[in-house]
Amino acid sequence: MSGRSIEIACVQQANAQLGEGPVWHPQENRLYWADVTRPCIYAFEPGAGQVGIWPMPSEVGFLVPREGSGVVAGLRAEGIVAVDTADGRLTPLVQPAIGKPSGRFNDARTDPKGRLWTGWLTDSRLMPGTLYRIDPDLSVTAVLNDIVASNGMGWSPDCATFYYTDSHIGTIWAAEFDLDSGELGERRRFFATRVPGETPDGMQVDAEGGVWTVIYNGGRIVRLDPGGKVIAEIALPVRLTTSAAFGGAGLATLYVTSAIRQQQAVVLDGQPEAGGLFALRPGVTGQADTLLPF
Image (tube, rainbow, N blue to C red; front, side):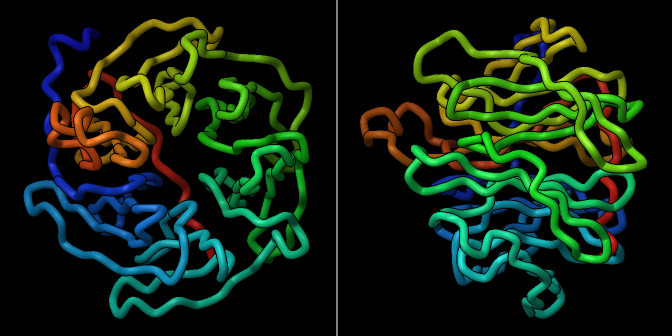
């Protein structure tokens, strides 16, 4: 697996300020992703390109696919909502962060039991956020309260390990996971970036147990083995890479989002595809996301 031998294509040039949250919806055969700060949700279909865009009333912190069609989104002001992509209607579901310091949701994933996991990212970055677990009955549990910049998360194929990123300290944690109870066990440091200014962002765990983390401000995505060792590295033609999702036929395509924020024009001149959606075939396949039951 080599970055130089893998074809990388910008499949949607969106000029996203902060492209994030890509998720593949298997029942619709489409990829949803968001622009967090110029808030909207995009729909992309292989072979067709952009097939939909839905402006949102406030910042979009995450997307997860729902059973049937559409997505559930975490919005700064409105909380967690169901988005009907047939007519754009929003249905409020739950707001777990009531009483928390000002902030927004940042990244989410549904576990195989249909529980939604999402983090709350505070605006100050000096106050820790919270990792929430939301069960199918919409009951809310605060699982961790010591994560500052909640980010990418995922499970090993056997669901015995939960991976979770704190971008503020450039670290991915690995924790023992009990699938039946949804509880986390002992936590250990799994991976940490060493280059100043670079940080792990969005994450995917492939079908072989490889952990893919997108390096924000590093212009690349790396694959880690279950011990946290880098075993592959793929460079992209933009610096602010943000998140990734496996999708397409057989979940063999890796889609990567990007951003243009906080980059001077002179830098962007050399990155005409910044803020776009990229696609590549890394030679491994992903795990299917569990569709959210609410």
